[in-house]
Image 1 (tube, rainbow, N blue to C red):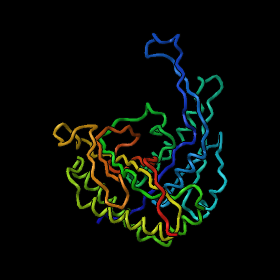
Image 2: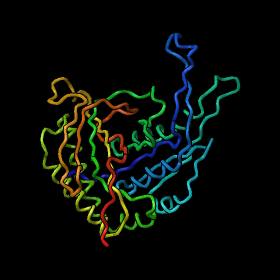
Image 3: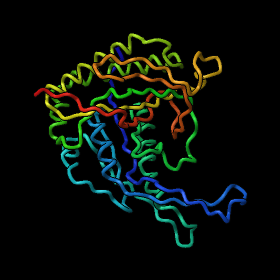
Length: 303
């Protein structure tokens, strides 16, 4: 069994980049045309990621900034209980006469810098959960492509719906710690197997069979607690050790391997895809956690 350790996640920025505007008069300029972007402030989307992460991590960090602080009513209980930390990061103002800066980019970059600082102190303990469709690390030009394997728990992970009170989620987290810890252990074992081999599993392994049981047990706990929940897809980007993903690997870049998840949900799968992941850090282990709705289905609760 994998060794137990703290797992933390940094939640990405609630500033979602929505439109890319290209200045067509600069199409032929060296280095490409000038571009600008519009941004959408979506704290509701960030809160959804916080809700989805709460059961599965020991600590959540969602940094604020002193330029345009984001306040979301209702999160106070998570801060009071120590599960959510909201450090305020100061954004340096440029000196008079300096070149204009993109304040949106600086505010989005606060979350990336927080992740980098935490990862430097505790390598591999912290992951990043983007908000919205983009990868989330900002600015993107500071990222470097690393060999990685994307693990998808497709339509397989129970997460609380938006109408569930945080107090009820924390109560379940406290009372059913054993089942949550079992799922964590099974995922850690899977991470170690994949990083150790440097490739996707070529068959349904014992680690995946044990993950079946852990998810099934947790789903039973959610039903018993009458916690309104949905199945979602969780994508985990797992960085490999440098040089482990090469031409000699048995599987092809970008071609997924799929194995059925025996958890009582039609269409549930484990998917593994070899890829390169843009990242601001270089070490093996989990990097990104991205939740998305697949064929979303409500967990059946007892009448």
